[in-house]
Every structure is written in C-alpha cells, then in structure tokens.
Length: 405
Image (spheres, rainbow, N blue to C red):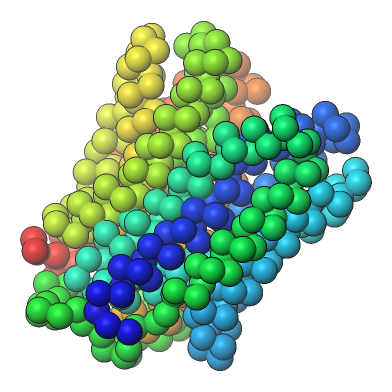
C-alpha cells in the first residue's frame, strides 16, 4: 500500500467506529424495551452496562488474536459479533438473559474487537499525527449515537422496535464487511514520506518494551489513574446530563433532550479537537488544559442558575472528557511503544470500565439521598483538581517533555 492510502485506512476505520458507536444510542431503546416487555429500569440498563464493561476486555482478547490472524480478520470477527448482537436482539421475546447475551455480550465484544484493532492501527499509520489519527477514529466512536439515534427513532416509528434491530443489524453487517476490506496494517518501521522520524520529539522509551514491563512501570498506573479521574468526572455529566438539566435548571423534556444532544456533539468533537491539539502543544500540556477547563466548568456548574451558562458548562466538561480518548492512545504509544499497542491500550482503557461504573453511580446514589447534585459536583471538582496537579507532575517528571512540531 502506498503512503497516500493511509487516509483510506483511517476513513474506513472512522466508518467502522461510527457503526459501533451506534450502541451508545441505548437511550432510544431502553424505554421502549421496558414498555414492551415490562422490564425494570435497572434490569434493562444492565445490558448496556455489560456492553461497556466488556469493551476493554475484548480489546485485550483482540490484541492476543490479531498477531495470529491479522488486523483485517480480527476486525471482521468484531463486525460479525457486533452486527449479530444487534440483529439477534429482535429475538429476545421478553427474556432478559437473551438481551444480555445479544446487545450486551455480543455487542460489547464486537465493539472492543473493532475499536481495539482500528485505533492502534491508525496510530501506527500516522506516527507524525498520532493525536489527529486517534481523534478521528475515536470521534467516529463517540459520534455514532449522534448519527444513529434519530435514525433509530424514525425506524421504530415506521417499522417497529424489533424490526429496527433486524434492519440495522443487517445494515451494520454490510457496512463493517466493506470497511474492513480497506483496513490494512502498515509495514514494519513505517514512516510517511518527507517526514523525519519523531523520535527526537517524543518521550524516550525502549522500543522493545513488553506489556509485562509496562505493567511494572509506575508511570502506567499514574496515567491509568489520571484516565480514570477523567472518566469518572466526565461520565457523571454524560450519563445524567438530561436529568440534571430537568431537576437543577427546571428544563423541559425538550430542553433536556437538546442538552443531551449537545453533550454528545461535544464528546465527539473533543476527541478530534484535543487529539489534534495535543499533536501541536504536547500530550501533557493538553491534559493540563483539559483538567483546568473541567475544573472551571464544574465550579460554574455549581454557581449558575442560567440555562445557557449551564449548557456551556456541561459541554465544556464533555469536550474534555471526550478529549481523553483522543490523547491517551497516543500517550500510551509514546510512553510504552507501539509494539502490541492494542494490548497495551486495552489495559489502559480498563480505567474507562471502572469510571463508567463509578461516575454515574456516585451521581445517582448522592441524588437519591440528597435530592440534588451539589455534592457530586464537589467530588468531581476535587477530582478535577487532583487530575490537574497530577498532569503538572507528569509533565515535570517526564524524561523528555513533548516539543511543538
């Protein structure tokens, strides 16, 4: 494959991640599943929790499989799992365990296989623009719900709930099958034409570092903890944005829905923006700015009574939360090497699984007991301050801070 075709690879990777990002339109399906089969809220939502929790595990499994069968086949398996999970959900017939198997297990495994293979592969194709590459691919993943949520609504109104799973399960299978045909791995030691190796501008790291060596480094756990802080604080807002708008700002259901839409847009846009920005200013400096903005937005959130200001604040938080997914893949590659990057980033992304449980759970638990979100915001503010201090410390102690390109 020639150098120009690396853009074909990243476009195909973006499309594949856009498809699996459709799983995040769960809020479209949950109330309708509850109404049709008389499921409870916690029982129904557990399918989505399973899907989220399996993503980092599936990434690790895919990383073990990819060297044996190649990236294209690994992505193809992920496509089969994801589209099958979507398609087979139409046959749940009121059985929660079947829903957990289809939307939860098959969907989560397929998501992890695809994202865990396309994201590290894109970074290897773009050693000169790692942040941009990870931002584009992650942006597709984050933007899937924005594209497909209204399409799912239209399909449900026109054809019905179960038929929608059938239609889109087949559509996703076709799109993912086509996309994976254009995703190839770069040759060993690949560098784009007319680009001097960035070794002089990136943190020094043994090229042969293994996953076991990475897991013995304190830096890995500091970065993992920093990623966790970002996920916990961000998901407090992303998971409860509509509810917060209603109970705190007195927003109508329509305004609350608009808030959720803007949250999703900020989440997806933040992945691309901060990924690209980190190429220019450096990864740690980008993390510092992201932590500062998140901290400021939570302070504003606690003080404001204006819906417009509230909307800006939650969008700022979501922008920086999404940005973590545009920065941390590159940060992992630059500190621990690109060999077995799928596996390395899978371990790093386990912080998301923890954050996806802790962040929304803290906000929900505190609201049930206090009938407001103030205490959750205070905890998030403290976490954001801790993330800011840790980002400063990491930049100061890094052996070779990133320079501007």
